Amino acid sequence: MAPRLPPSSTSVRAFVTVARLGSTARAAGVVNLTQSAVSKQILSLEHHLGMPLFERSPAGLKLTEAGAIYLPYAEAALEQMERGAMRLSERSALGRPIRLHMVAIAGERWLIERFPAFAETHPGVDVQFTNYVSESETEEPDLEISHGAPPWPDKEAHYLFGRDVALLAAPALLERMGGFRRAGDIQKMTLLQHFQMPTFWAEFTEAHGLRGAVPAHTVRYGYYSVIIRAAVAGLGVALAPRCYVAEELASGALVNPLDIGFTSVTGLWLTRRLDRPARPGLDAFIDWLKVEAAAFEAATRAA
Image 1: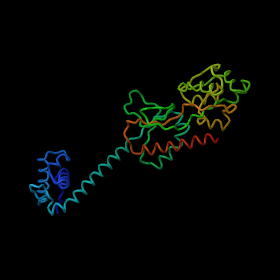
Image 2: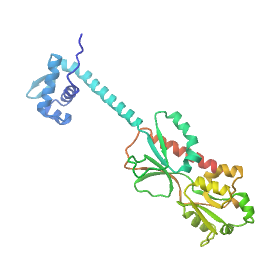
Image 3: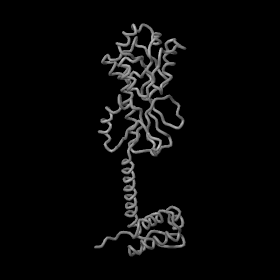
Image 4: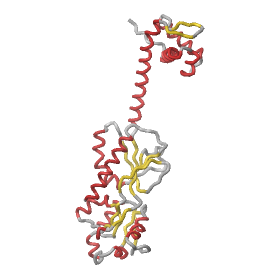
């Protein structure tokens, strides 16, 4: 027996809509066709099935027995097509990676070693990492992890960690400089400063009653990884988030003289632009990042 498929999904949609509303005029606006076109779609479907689906009268259209039998199957067919289209749309969205733009140190000292746990539990979520987007890049990141301080009126923002800032130095440097007995001794030393964190020195001096003090010399770097290596090499003292130097503090390569530090207004934040569309897996990734960040900061404080 040859399959009795309808002439088109449009004819089936027109039939279902007319059956619900009882009028081709009212159905026309719903299916974006003219009233005449709706009538033609119904007639085409009736011709295909070989029997009338509606009784026509001045009062409107009423389903025939055949129409009443056919209606639930037509509704189910449309529902299945809509579900299929939705699944394809979701699959297409999942195929586009989530772009995460982050400062390099966050990946090196925190995220990358933890990310396999997320990837294992969310195999369908593809996350692409970058710490630089060129001027010619047309696709903006979905998420950004960067140092800063709120507010960001056009962004959803979540604090991650990094406001606990410590004074850091190599033991050999302190010995060479005659030790470190009070906060003011920092003025005798070279300061290794991140060029994006110029306020750290002002915050440090304010916290320790040294307003107006200046270091003997300042060297600026663009990456925390370089600052940390320079500090380990004894090239100067650094002010850096404690969480980034947990390994060096644990090994003794760096020390925090007199346990001196301060709580900065600047921290590491996760942001998402409010005008960006929702993406499958994005909310799950954000929630995971927040949980992992809280655990990381707690572990750093307990160390």
